[in-house]
Image 1: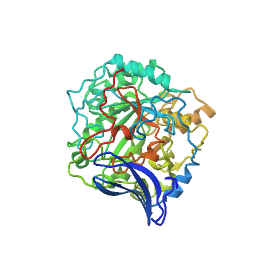
Image 2: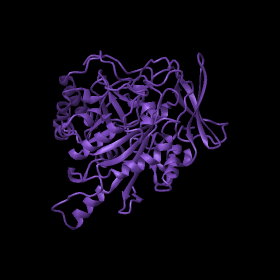
Image 3: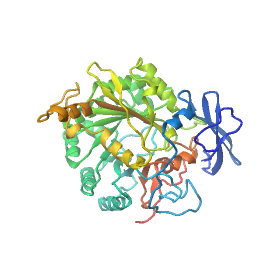
Image 4: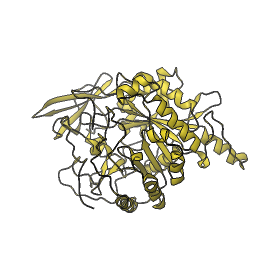
Length: 460
């Protein structure tokens, strides 16, 4: 039985593979549904059995998978590694991977100006040398050749990328290499503190800022990031508004800390349109750095996020407004696109999901959903100046400006990793050894802090 559908009685489980959270050994696993919850179950001969909920509530797992429009995939035409130990050890991309690459993260530094309690990259090590600019430009050359029919979308990440003084040149290099969408993943500290910095980034060619944003008050930031940051986030958003640099709020959801703020975050984001183009919710994954002593840690599942969005906004959005995302296995994420009416209500828009060119449409969608129409932004009250447009052109511009996206990605950690899902990942990290590795495989961390891929030092 395929892992695409879990058994509803718990007696005939769907077969897949996973890893032991303690030693990362590859293990047979099964997806079993009991009542409204789907569990990923596995047993390590050395470290015992594990049962973790990966889907809890409505819509059902089966209905959600079916909404993805079939099981057809688009395997990469060119691979860089062979078959040896199998998934998740042969990444590169290997011949068994079932989807082409959509987005590529480039980690340009491991340094950081924060020391967050939750950090997938475990950033902050000042002794770790940054890759030189010349090497990053070589990576662009490699990615251009590996991009098949169209260039990848580039996410500049870290660590904290703004720690690098040559970040504008790194961005310019991506533009000159012909990449259509360049996203900057940042905590916003430098954007808030350095006058004119956001303008410099915009001029260099940043398409959108993916801003770490976990709540509307300092109590949340103290628990997740270890310090008060509300004023910093406000200043960073204002700096982006002045620079006409579109923003997506990237929210790490930690059970018991900010899961009750989901609705408040949405309403806050809508108040900052059009410069804030959307929200991306990321239920916490336990890899990299997280509080010590966590055994069988709690996970937030996709249906729980959708339910919270509906309940905490009083029905401003409904769980039925959302469907599977375009950049992974359907169980990995969700997507909702909305038109914001003049009275502040949201009207869901329809996005047709096709199988034939799924990976290409995914690249195009990611590259366009968070940019401002015509590359211009208006004020955060929702108005903008769009000159020289009449009739249909003006209608399209106004329509695009009113669009707002709500998305989410349930990244897999050593407890929840399902190799069926991993084989369909479209979000990759480029390693120093010139290997394209799925994001969750790259960050997979054992309870003892060991990784399979992160930190490899293969030569160029």
